[in-house]
Amino acid sequence: MGKKDKSSLLKDFFVEQLQDIYWAEKALVKELPKMQGATTTEELAEAITEHVTETQEHISRLEEAFEMMGETARAKKCEAMEGLIKEAHSIINETQKGSATRDAAIIMAAQKVEHYEIATYGSLVQLAKTIGLNDVAELLGQTLAEEKNCDQVLTQIAEGNINEEGAREEEGEQQMEEGNEGEED
Image 1 (cartoon, rainbow, N blue to C red):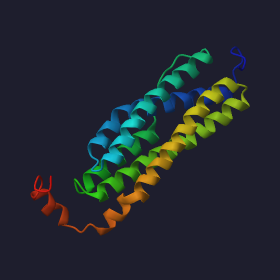
Image 2 (image 1 turned 180 degrees about the vertical axis):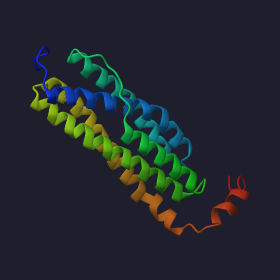
Image 3 (image 1 turned 30 degrees about the horizontal axis):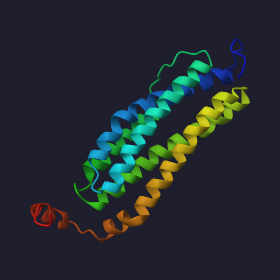
Image 4 (image 1 turned 90 degrees about the vertical axis):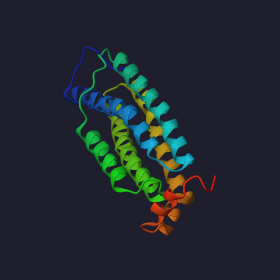
């Protein structure tokens, strides 16, 4: 671990970025269930549910990282994540309920979030190593690996069938099917 009493501009920046991603992860714990509730396929719903559990672990790891550095775990509003969450809401509202197209859109929104997190955690791991916080770097590296895995899972789900189903959907088709709900069950 690095020296607690020595502060640098880079370490201060590092702490601010930890606070930023801490806010982002806490916001995601609240937002992911809303995305999950808008999905059509069970496979996507399960993947999002699993990621909620992982995100809770990411929050715990961040709290542990703050503690390892002798810092108080404090969230600083993440403007980027706020924007990504707003975009996810728009995507859900602008796509047809019950459609594969909506699931494809949810996957896209979720992957935008994942890519932001991958970029952030990747940078944080490198900064932690640079300032001598190797234990913190290792801890954040675990989260980075999980974010990359989530991105891959979302890609597999999209490529597995959702994108193809969405490509076959026609406007108005879903509205007819919604009127016939329960007849196929």
